[in-house]
Every structure is written in C-alpha cells, then in structure tokens.
Length: 77
Image (cartoon, rainbow, N blue to C red; front, side, top):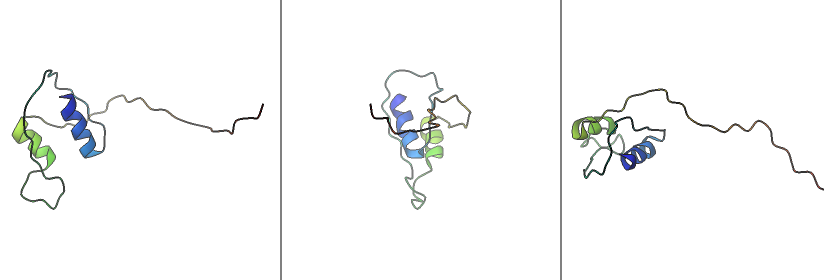
C-alpha cells in the first residue's frame, strides 16, 4: 500500500495517508485518466473505487511542518 499511496500523492500533488490497515505486497493494474482530456478512462477517484475497491476520503491529519520566522546573515568572527 505504501507504493500506491506515494503514487497517488504524487499524482494529486497533496499528502495522502494510508488508513486501510492493509499490509503485504499486492499485484494489480490501475488504469485512470491522467488528464481531463482523456475521456476513455475514469478519473483516479473512480478508478480506485471501481477497480480496487478503495476510496479517497478527505480528512484532517496532523502534519509536521517547519516554520522559518527569521533569517540573518552570519556574523564575521
């Protein structure tokens, strides 16, 4: 599932977290429309549901962030 989550996260350009509880290796093929002009394939959301029985839900998760509030040039010693 980790590989699938990384691929989906990259495709959607946003964080995706695995909340399935599934472990182990799986062999599958997932076909979806990479862009909206491809009308022959389903969207990523529909493909996950129809082909793998998985669903993407929007949830709020804690995410680690780094905040830089000030930058200074180093002083010369």
